[in-house]
Image: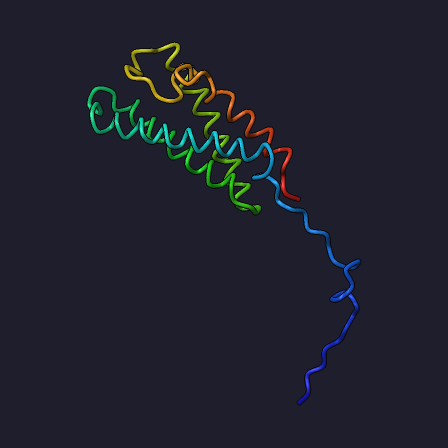
Length: 150
């Protein structure tokens, strides 16, 4: 039995192909954004590791939040560097989580300093890091909005 293949002309005609939008989140300024997230992933991981290993009993909540921030920065770094819709969604979730974390932890550490006897990356809205933790997710969300896949 012979299988028939109907040629419609769309297979070989480049004019009939759907244009594919290139994922450009990790190009241009996106590379700088990824690099800054990578630096924060490393520094937050080192800070959390040191705090948990040496001072966990003194401020467990602060140290757990430092570790959580490290995980958020790692996920943001990886997802910003990867192409595709799924990674885009992961990036948005990670950056939104970071923004909420900075705002909540920043506000609590400002109005109830006793709750955070040791600083986290997000304490006082990232004051110990030049407020970069506060500005970074805003820039990240603006970049992601500009580079939203179709």
